[in-house]
Amino acid sequence: MLPQRTLEDIEVVNMMRKGQVKRLSGQDSQAQARFVLSLFQIAAWQIVLDKLSCLKVIFAMKP
Picture 1 (cartoon, rainbow, N blue to C red):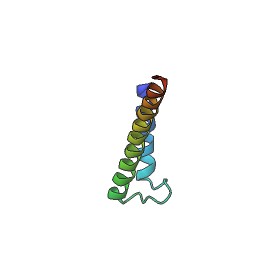
Picture 2 (tube, one colour):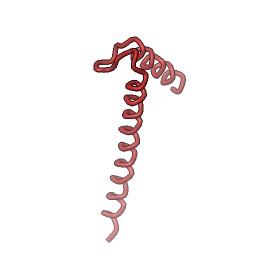
Picture 3 (cartoon, helix red, strand yellow):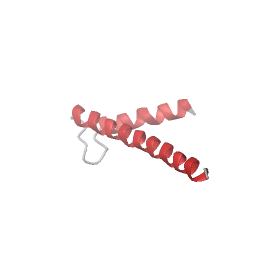
């Protein structure tokens, strides 16, 4: 699965570079970097929320 994911990631970077992502210029590398950072932040928050929901289940099971 990793090689497929890597190819998808490369394709996304190429799309950004070509200006094919809405509201993101292909020439603005700083905006592209902020966009990628925001994706990582969203993914990181999703991991945190998943961990918190697991904790809620664990504590809900205790008497």
